[in-house]
Length: 264
Image (cartoon, rainbow, N blue to C red):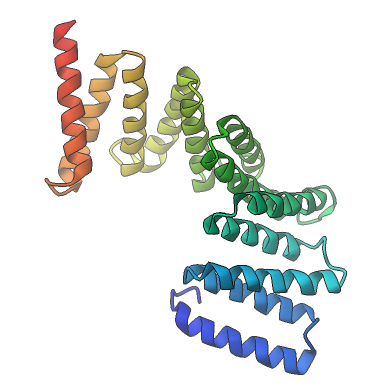
């Protein structure tokens, strides 16, 4: 399944479910595991209805076995919440993710494998933040991303990809909320880490400069914005096709900012 052969995986997973149901009975933990994996395969194939049904079947078995507060149940709830979001059922998605958080927070307090529980909780918080962001509840989205970041930085290095991704999401949320100065500060911190890890001319660092240039334009700081845009333009010319819309757009903005500076 992890090699991307999802159609083959689907056939094998359906066979596994049938065999386990026949040998173990329907309400067995191993059958729940198979349904949960089946839900992941259906999600990868973009068969969201079937994915939701498989996750719900896994949950029904967990509940029947009085295993509603296990780590495995919280992961199923998280996956179900994400799938419901992609299906457009945002309210139900939020409910399932909150159910997952309730279990995960309990495991943070009680589990011996605390780091795993912290990481799982940060993922669920980030997923929840994405839904609120999509509903234009930017304040709640920023808060949830910040909660996720607090957990992530307690167990991961500052340059871990998940930490960098969450930093970027916080900065974008702050920008959407009109907190331009705060957003810029976060992007600058992100850019510093990216430059140290990937290099100043890496795609990651240059992309962050692009975000910062937009915010600097909003602050009428055209000189610094133009410097960043030129860096972005240099990278795009080296790595993108000359007809790429991103390159064309950057060239247009750079020209407009240059004219604006000349008029000052």
